[in-house]
Length: 369
Image (tube, rainbow, N blue to C red):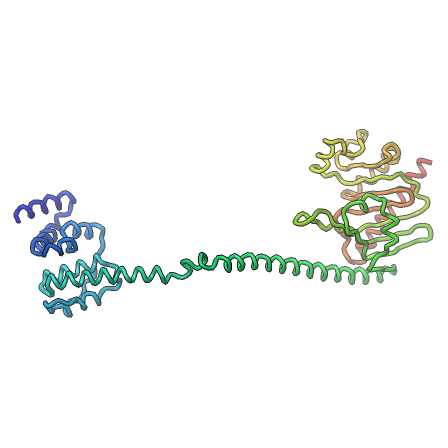
């Protein structure tokens, strides 16, 4: 026994906690007195010291209900908040044995019962964990729900978008009709199929598919046919599909003896790639600022260059962002991808731009004559 005291003192000194010496000595005594089968489960001095060093404080339990030395620990076990806190329970059993409140046999039995109870509680918790194996057991149902939900969501988005577009277009048509009435002009919401045929050779009508003219405003004069309309066409497919909506003013007259010609704002990226393959348009080196911002295309390059003299180049530069397309008998004026606001002032101004362009083109033809 003296040997045990010496070992306990040296161990406590190394750990720097001399205050635990008497607890350790008590644990040694308990270990010496306990039967062999209790030696593994009783609280030794080392375990007591480690528990103290980690700062785990154990609550003081009322063991008055366990003073029956024939051996039941219901009072101690009933005071545990967490059955799996076996360390605290073991400390209480040790205290009960030291104080004579219960026998070592009863403590051993209580210890075994508590370990079994803790293991059972942990096992039940794992088995009852919600959703633990549900996905694996119902994989087909889970995948159906996920993909079905995504499909329904996509369909709902498309439906909402189409309903929104339909309502927006309906409201625009009604507003344009009212604005046209204020200007004293004729309005044809469904457009005119013959106009599509007459303009089919112009570049803007040679792009995309499902081409459609709507919201046609007719502002003819005796010598000039003027039409303002919304033009729709679609490019790409699937996720890359794009709807192009543009308001165009068309001016037609037999006096317009013009070459086939297109003048449009330059797209730095797309036109840069086209120029690498020799499709960058007609060179306009004599007008470097104009050539930097605009692309000129024509199947009659010499006639197009002759038509675009300094005055016509200045006209195009003044209308920044505008496109000009022409052929014999017709001139188109528009801003690609943009529509005119559906009010009388905007429509009047847009028609005025068309008349001004017609006048500029007529003056150019007179200079050429």
